[in-house]
Length: 154
Image (cartoon, rainbow, N blue to C red; front, side, top):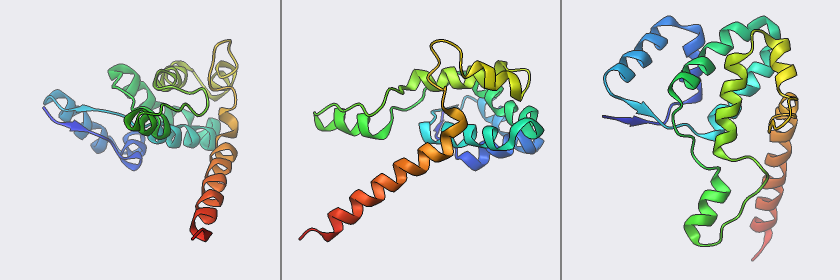
């Protein structure tokens, strides 16, 4: 049995290319399994938001597939490294289980409008999902600023 960390672009192609879907299904049927990176799911969900209603049905295919298999989602990098180094750190409130909730939310939505309504349901960790690009860019800007400061130090 092989364990894979799927690339975002492969999963994007899942909804666009029947051959990719068939290959991934054949891999699973042959005993392969997957583990998912939070960043991959975030990139896929940004595509859903950016694609809007025009591409929703196609984009939703990969989320239905992910939901059907419910593969493990890795911990976010900062909490993982903190635990590994003995100083647990949790930045934000998102945990791996929330990514399963996101898969479920997109997979079960009949259309883009329903997806947008579901994001605001009580208990959702994804109320700001429509702002994912801005949030992601803000985090990256903060990290790059930190790296610049570190680079300037002796």
